[in-house]
Image (cartoon, rainbow, N blue to C red; front, side, top):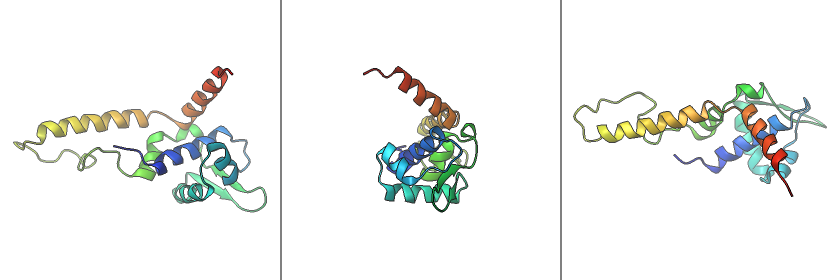
Length: 144
């Protein structure tokens, strides 16, 4: 499994909205500047997040985007699944165990299943709030 640029940027965008949340909309321009990501690319990603109900847009002067829920309610897994689709390293893992009795692939399938379960365990237990806290800890420890 390899997380695409779209998935990585979506996570950074959502983290930015969580970290800079003051209750006021945040513009794509501000996010792009802080994250050093093209505004055009962020607009494509925010459209996906908006359609999924993860963010809402506020139009007009001073407009921008806001999270629709508390950062504790978003997991890294939710964001990656929205932008990446399946996180399974091979086909068939999300649908349950295929009938591989006696098939030579049975042993390797169990390895892929364990990888899939481990990835899900990690991404489904890290929230945006966790990432905001970690980001603040890193900033507090930064010494010039």
